[in-house]
Image (cartoon, rainbow, N blue to C red):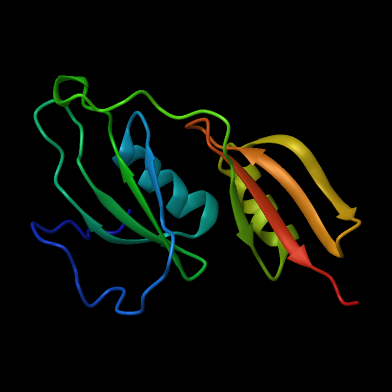
Length: 141
């Protein structure tokens, strides 16, 4: 894992406005950050150091040019339970390479990569933290 752990946000890491950024609450946010670096080529931009319980309140990653934020749940601070019924779509140029890296890091196949009616190769994986990732590669039309 990269040793990018600071005490204040890195404001130079992402100066462009991104619109919507996924913010995931997972059990073991720092472990998830390490996993996403292996499985999805994530770059660690910022992380609040873990507390005495091994939890962190904020991790900022960049995956394929976009930001994603992570944190651990903190029941004593009324963090809500994890939401259900969502997945994250990752638009990629080389789906086979992205797919294999995630599989090698332990992701489970939900839906194998398939040529889809909307003009893309598409598949779904579940990572070690229960998050579903949909990989999508647009094909030439």
